[in-house]
Length: 170
Image (cartoon, rainbow, N blue to C red; front, side, top):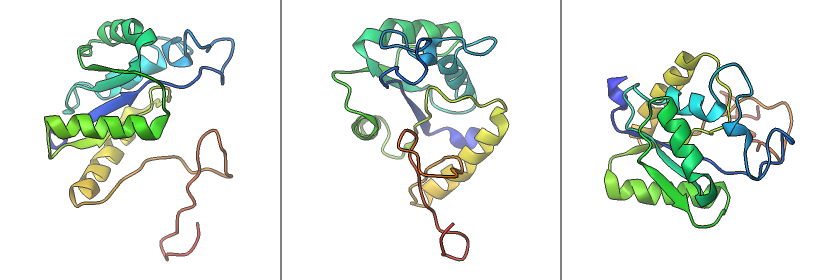
């Protein structure tokens, strides 16, 4: 994926830790728990975007989690020196804005990838194919979002009602 050389993954690690209680709680979120065999969801996210031609990831987290984030990144061989401490949780929008402003200082031609830290992706190759296709569109000046096809609106996950190929509803 050499064509992804200027894709900067910026992993957001936040949330309130309430959706998978008691495994996930305020002090130890589900991303850090080995819910499946092997690595945690967070470690799988880090590994998925490491060594694939991406710039080493930046990570945004709260001060309370900085040590576990660094430890889990190191455990899977990912550079754990690019961690930004969020002074106060402000949800996804402000976090992505902070990521974009941070990257603007580093590389004005950067493409930013914001992968969730808690998604399970069993086969990373389709993910990388999708990122490559999205990168091509982004380099052409388009804003690209990735998601799954929802069957209904869900406030906990978001919902986009996208037009179909004819421009009509889904």
